[in-house]
Length: 594
Image 1 (spheres, rainbow, N blue to C red):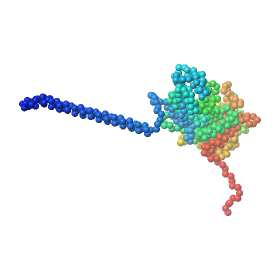
Image 2: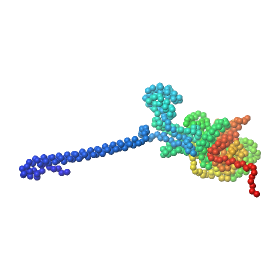
Image 3: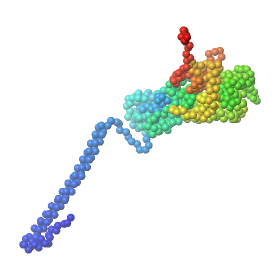
Image 4: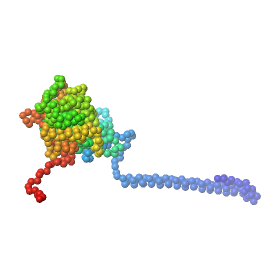
């Protein structure tokens, strides 16, 4: 912008030539300069006012939009944000194979105190002790009057307890939101679920972690937010599990047993439909672990998985099956049963005198120790060990539980010929009921290896072959005859062709070696229907005694077999198995053609 001079020389000279006053020219130019400056200031002010007006318009527009959003939203309590990783309180549900809840979450509250804000510590301690009888009034008062700034009182409380604490009226008693693990079915499947407890805790949330069973085995999955709350589906059937527990508990009481276990397994997939261990517990109020004595006496001990026992004559079918697979015998081969069978200082006897010889089938039906031992001698220690290993008897079960690795089979330190003989009829090798169920399933489903699992399977995976289909069918026939005319006659269930084998093993002494004379482990391992196998059921009783007669009866035929029969009678319809009933022949006049 060019600046106009106040006294331009040309105009001054002309003005003087005309006799005019040159100062008028200066005054005129000064006025024009002032007018231009005023116009410039005015335009600048107008621009600033326009910008300021636009800014106010945008601000009020944003405020108006936010007010409209808040007015249309659902009201909720404000939540304080915290720096760092928040405690993940959400935990996925656990459901059975049909989607029914086994474990879920419940919103509750915790109770804590700020002792320094306590107005009347004595009254607060007194009333809290009345609401929570397990709290000590004197101890509470001591804590309230001490130097502590924060004090946990209860990790979780019920709505009724929360209201009662409200009524105390103390500003120092505060509540925090809390999520607790709930098992709505109580003790049902307690050993499988295990239980949960609190990990990291805060006043606004708490971390729920698994402490046993599948809760701990799948803890990372159940707590993973990436799963978006998808439940963990087990292979269990809640209805069958409840029925099995009821039957086994009643049978355990009738048979005066110290403990009991049962395993119901799908013979083709290895899915465990029901697994029971008694005595049991309520995972909502999980008992403490024993610090002294025998851990197997604790209700937390899972007899089906952790308990390893000499299971007795239920092992005989594996011996005959291997011998048939090797071509050493067939179902009709006659076996020398003359006894006793002597090996060094050991003598093997039968429960009854079965005569000089029995067929292979009758060795199983009559449960001859001598006959089974002679067959095992033909097999040999090396081949016997390899066969039992192929059925999973030499390693812990791969079951999806943290307790499974503790159920390691007890093997003889030296697998000698005498070990081969005794193991053939279930002594000298200790395994769990789950091992036995998986072994029977592998042998009787057509001869392919089955891996037990607690997870729902939608497909059947063909395992490696352990015996031929012909040997599998012959083994099922032998087990069916054990029920029809052998030691398991009480296992006959109308409409269901049950096959199985009894086993009664003397219980080893805890100290000093040897076996008890009046304490046994009785077992019945069964398959049903035997003509079209679908399920394997194993029932084991610890120290049973049937006392209805003049003398106590402890054998499996009198103790475990009736319980298994009742369990099959109760659960088979729940599993969708229709009873096969022979149709009566028509009576009366029959129309015939000429």
